[in-house]
Amino acid sequence: MNKPRKPLLGLCPIGKFVFSNEDAIRQKKRLQKLLRQWKMPFVDLEGVLEDGLVKDQSHVDTVVAHFRAAGVECLFLPHCNFGTEGAVGMIAHKLGLPTLLWGPRDEAPLPDGSRLRDSLCGLFASSKVLHKLGVPFTYIENCRIDDPALATGVDRFLRAAHVANAFRSGVRIGHIGQRIDFFWTTIINESELLERFKVEVLPLDMVEFIRATKDRARRGQAGYRKEVARLRQRMTVEGFDDPAALIVSLAARDQMLAMADEHGLEGLAVQDFMSLVNEVGAYCFFAECFVCDKLAVGYESDIHGAISNVLVQRASLGTEPAYLADVTIRHPTNDNGILLWHGGAPLSMCDPGVKPRVGQHWILPSPLSGMPHFRMKQGPITTARFDGDRGDYMLAVGEGRGIDGPDTLNNYVWMEVNNWPAWERTLIQGPFIHHVAMAYGHFGDALAEACRYIPGLTPVRLGEGTTPVSG
Image 1 (cartoon, rainbow, N blue to C red):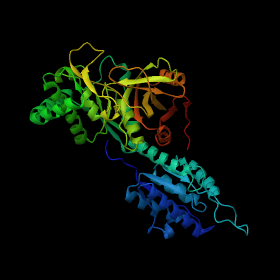
Image 2: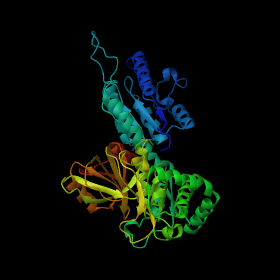
Image 3: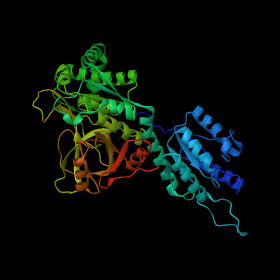
Image 4: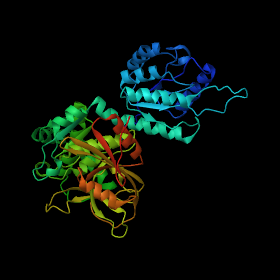
């Protein structure tokens, strides 16, 4: 995967002319120290406002200009002693960024009965103004600064903001080829994706792609032959007695990555068969095993699947690749188990105790090779599916864990979930299909939270039902 990336946080500490200014400064400094310990990139208001605190509505334009110039991607409004609710609302409204609201839990009154701050009271006031101005926000419960709820909440918010910002800044998905005729499930509305979610589908001509791939294979022949020799040591390679087709397949990998760099793509949708297979002389799923460790790939022209992979990768903050798996058969003995299966899984997902194999397609009657076969590793799993029909878009989100199960072919992992019959009914009733993005780790809450900031996208928690979204 690429270097992990956390969105730049605009730290906007909120004070007020009432209550203790000294305590507000102390709370702000404690929070700044924590964010540095958590290695969370942020821009604050030091040197911009007195004490680095927003205390008056006259500060709004200065703060907005400062954060815009710094390029912040999300906003944190900690209420350090009370809350200047008008400034809170206007700053958040003008910036239009994912917004986090929190304040430190108030201590007991002092011996004389006075209080240093009323942070919770200020939060109530500010939340009302955010509602009034139509600003969606995330809230972390009023807790002490060293409570785990704060660390968990900030982490979840940053992941959610990174997911939502895909649709705020725009996503480009390259489509190699065209939709396969008999895959009606992957018919999508490109115009709606562009107008509503800033998702641009860039058509990439299949003929030009194949020509460029073969040219790349010719020019890099010597290097590819050396790579083939190394691959034969790392894995079992079948059906490539003449390495020419395998070399072209590897060149297809490099051409995909080069096109992604050239066009600024965050994902690819690939037709996969059969014209590509016939011209290359091999299935390119093995090539996609390498591509998927760096780029979101939707197999079989599944553009919504590629978008799903983008969102899951962003929820991991770039630490985990995503894989578009088929939801296939139920576990033979575990009623909450399901098989996640397909081809082209990132090689980094291979079970460490398994030697990968490249061979024939076991379903399609073809003598060609290029299909990867390996069991994937176990561990915590997050799945997601972005999909929609007739203008109604949803993001199905679920979590599970890898479990033992029977061996099968291609790339697979058995996953146990909380309530498979409920998952099954939700996926069947739609608007979803059998392809889901999966990645290792649990960040379903962040994916669902991201929908607060994506107008027109409703989160559905698999096994639970629809999650309402409010401000």
